[in-house]
Length: 112
Image (tube, rainbow, N blue to C red; front, side):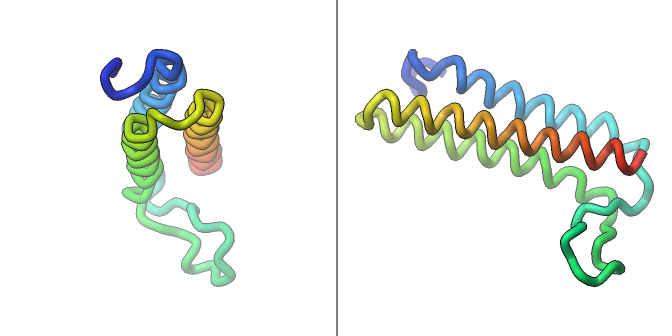
């Protein structure tokens, strides 16, 4: 990881990878215990479209890994940007992954 990510961004990069892994593990472990349909889309106005098949739970880990891969790639590409901007972007990415994980946990707690 040291070639892709500068040394001062190692800690947020490791946090991003850890959060993506934990999100994947959480979805994988909870999958057998979920109901056949789960309510992911609460904001839809039509109640029959709020429930989806339980396979949709893997949307959260996929989203986490896409964010992690794309943001680590962007960090590696934009090495010339000021250090504070890089740190802000990295920690914002960690916060985004944390929110994604919290939403996943909330959904699992509601359904099980």
